[in-house]
Image (cartoon, rainbow, N blue to C red; front, top):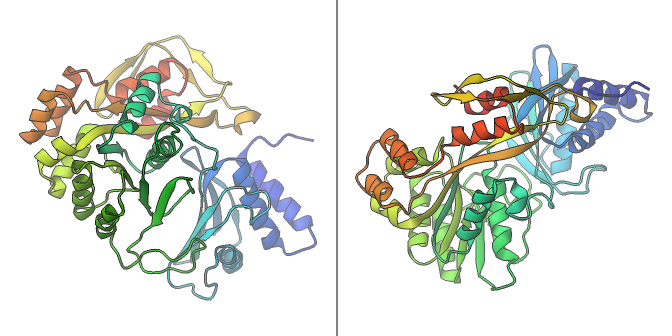
Length: 420
């Protein structure tokens, strides 16, 4: 038997096996696609209808791959099959819907899933999001950060007050890091702390944490985790939970001014706050908070820890070392790599050359008085960045270069994630 080494060959195998079964072809195929995605550790499946058919795409290690195409005539049946799993309304095809599928409901799929639909010109676009496995990233050590960063995060959760912020773009692993910090607090045997989280959505249940699912979006279908608090905005819910005697608060994501103000107020009044925020760099996130209207003295007094991170695909063991220097430009900075490794591809990595992902980060030393003064004086982002580097901050791109030279990732992957 010829070994299946590429994603396209996987898809062709599922097609052939589904046609050979006696039952409904699409039902069998959807089940195989979902189970196959779980085995291949895909984070998302896209069923993208277009003029030439329905493209089936997997996102693996942050990269979207096209597996194959199905006839457009199957669009309605595919959407209906997936909607049934999530308890959505199959006859509503002109409005977006979103629902959740509990783990174990589909054979071969251990994770929970979120299924969302949206009407397009050629039919409903369906996206399946796999929540990370329950046993993934249970601790700070399992995240994959370097030892100094691990120690920094341990010190962060040992604090009794202040804001611990994890920043980065979408898909940079911010939520995974926040969950690891939350577990570290909840599973600590030395002391019991009152922990409350406000999330949208709740990805995993954590013993010892009062988790509340909050959303201001209108109801889009069923949810198997109970009705969300849809009449309360995140900032109002955060203010309300302050009356429930919390010591630690986790806000899934700070998106706008009112939530930021409520979160920083909690951090200023003796609570440990953990949250995530969209930002290109640690210093840039400070600038974005200022643009939201947060006063610089509030940022200076409330933020205790500010970590910016990205996720890079890890090279498979089939990679080959190249013994030569390479000039590389990342985020507008010219860098020199002394040597590097190139992806090759093998059956173990599905021919991609990569297997899994690793984090890379930078930490803004807010305890430094000169940096604190620069924030209070609202200095330009570039000025604060240079000052932070003078005071000992290792920029994200420099840490990426170190990961390249140690063979953990490649120059091409660094350019893909960080850009020029």
